[in-house]
Amino acid sequence: MAVRLIPLNDRVLKNDGAPASDGSYKFYLAGSTTPVTVYSDRGLTSSLGSSVPIDAEGYPTYVNVWGADDVSYKIGIQATGYNDGAEKFFDYAAVATSAVVDNSDTTPAFKNLLNNGGPSNWTGGTSFSNISGSAAAVEIADDWFFSQNGTASNAISRQTGDGQTARYAMRVGRPAASVSVETLRVYQALPTDNAYQCRGKTITVSFSLKKGADFSGGSVGVLIATGTTEGESGNLMATGGWGGFVTALSTTQAPSATSTRYQFSAALQSNIKEAGLQLSYTPTGTAGSNDWIQIEDTQWEVASAATDFAARPEPIEFLLGNLSPYARTLLDDVNAAAALATLGIGANRPYFRANKNGTNQTGIADITNTKVTFTTEAVDNGGYYDTTNSRWTPPAGPVQIEANVTITGTFVAGLECRAFIYKNGADFMRSSPSHTASTGGGTVSVSIMDVANGTDYYEIYVYGDVSSGTITVSGSTILSSFTGIWLG
Image (tube, rainbow, N blue to C red; front, side, top):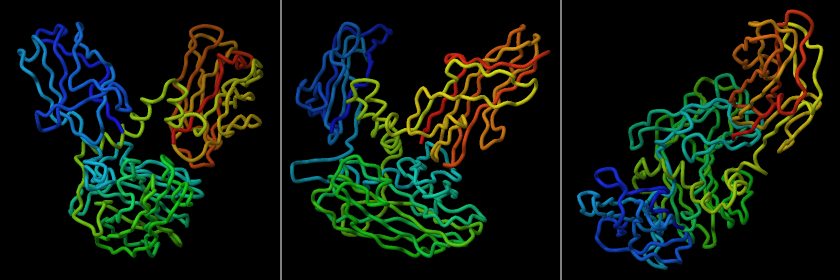
């Protein structure tokens, strides 16, 4: 695969702030002065040599400059009036994410093929409650995903590690008094390139594990799986849903009350294109206050036995966890629709927009919260919006909901009108009060981001204070609407 070497819109400025008008970018192997070839295309077929000129406005003459992702690069910039004319170097401006020395050597650039094995990075938050449900995949620590069937009942948090290597640990369990016996699953699928590096090899997975005082699962399931199709969701491991699915290892481990390191080895097939690790447990009975497992120092290495845990540098883990899977693919997308599909917004992501199809809703009582009906779907991806009941019941996961409602009536300047989002039949979020400036009415808007559990439903209500008569909600499709998108 390829990596972009010069950021888009990069510009070289002279010491006085004016654009450089000559000079070049020069490319070397990291840590050396050995020139290295770069390319104008991601396929690495159109060579630019080892330097790219700077144009009269200070920009590189080629917008796209690519290098191989199995090479670490040093970049030099030299131009009149820049850095007093001396070449300025940026060593390791791009760091190899895989290493291929020759056609027979697939030694990874990093020993640990899992990203964020610590886990150190928690971009999306450090605690989660009752997420997933209905087997939805939800990212917790960067590149680590959680899934639970049925109704969500879980408590996940970042904890201080036990001091072996990693700073933090990942705690996964049930909240106190939960009676859910749905399996709790944590998993990570390797990037495709890393899976290729394991072809025909023996790999060893190791991690530190301990249990809470009320752990009810008995043992922790350990699954190492592979497939022969690129880019499938790691959530499919649980059901064997990968193309060419193979269970390389499936076993259990009874955890201790103190953090203990375990290791498991498996021989992988020579044709794999995806691979992943899943840890899980199935709770029983009613949860006590400490029904959990805690995981840290997780490592996947090409070796017949575990070695000491080694994390990648934290900035690299952050970038890999938050940029690489999408950034590389989005560069291939030629239009907005393709980019939305890459990000999962499209055929695979529920969203809707509903309206009143031009029919006003009349007779709304004064100072009374009243449900607004939205009986027409402009779009309903996934079929989760109910036009009969004017409500949206999205799958489990984070959602964004918004509504605009335009009302008219005999308002006196200063009287109040509001819009509400109701959740499961109760007031959940309300707009700031809109005080009408004159007789007539106005538009009120309300929005919220929430985490749905798979059975939660959302509706829109309106309130108005008129001096006489009743209130009307405009049926215009551009003045009154109800929208939502599942962000999971």
